[in-house]
Amino acid sequence: MTETTAHPAMTLTIAGSEATGGAGAQADLKTFQELGTFGMVALTCIVSFNPQDNWNHRFVPVETQVITDQLEAIFGNYGPESLDAVKLGMMGSPATISTVAAAVSARRPKHLVLDPVLICKGQEPGHAQDTDNALKAELLPLATFVTPNHFETEQLSGMKVETLEDLQAAAAEIHRISGAAVLAKGGIRLAGADAVDVFVDAEGMEVLTAPKIGEHAVSGAGCSLAAAVTAELAKGASPMDAARSAKAFVTAGIRQRVAGNTPFDALWQGGLRR
Image 1 (cartoon, rainbow, N blue to C red):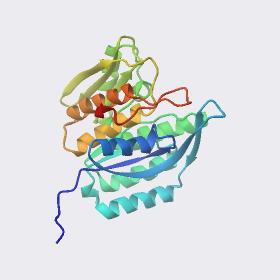
Image 2 (image 1 turned 90 degrees about the horizontal axis):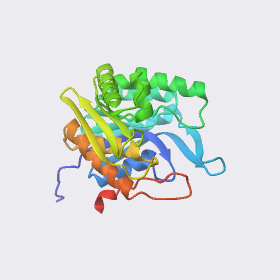
Image 3 (image 1 turned 120 degrees about the vertical axis):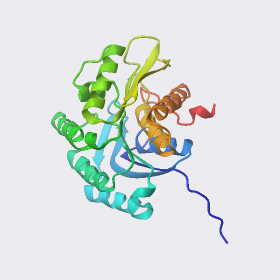
């Protein structure tokens, strides 16, 4: 007779593949595993850095029917009620956004964490703008938690962010627009010795700080932060506690970052082990 035990918290990322392992769905799955959840992935696109072109992105979308098939398999196997939290990463096109929006609207996961990836190097400017507009119109209203970086915070809020006070105001505006909890990342973009992020939800606002580790952005930090929030929410944490834990997770991963031939290092999701 097989003994049964309670299953782990279940987490799904709907995101793009980034082959070198520093970002995208690969980073999400590693984060889910590190934080003790059962991770699943539905791929939206394939992104490959090009070492012959200054490491810019080569972008290939996954066909929308294939995205639908992946989600049908995942939700059909476990049932929408079994997925504790879903993360949305890079979409890449308006068609993909519409496909994913329809799928999550039909299933209504309890926690829907949106990492609002608004630009991809290598896309045509007009296409990128169409994608940005679709994301704001179709996915932002569905999200329960949003994790914009500095650029995305400015775009979603319509406000210039140069100081901590600006970041606080912009985060509050995104919360007002969306109704979602917001973790707006100032990171290394704001002046000062600390990497500063702002969390805001209906319960209030908190500034999260940690000493800056270098002056350059690290690949995978944004993906891993949103994935860590997703994992913590799936395990039952409050949005505020999920934000705090995710900040600590990413700070440790940046400290233990991995260098390669790209002009940027990659976050290591196992940083907290040390």
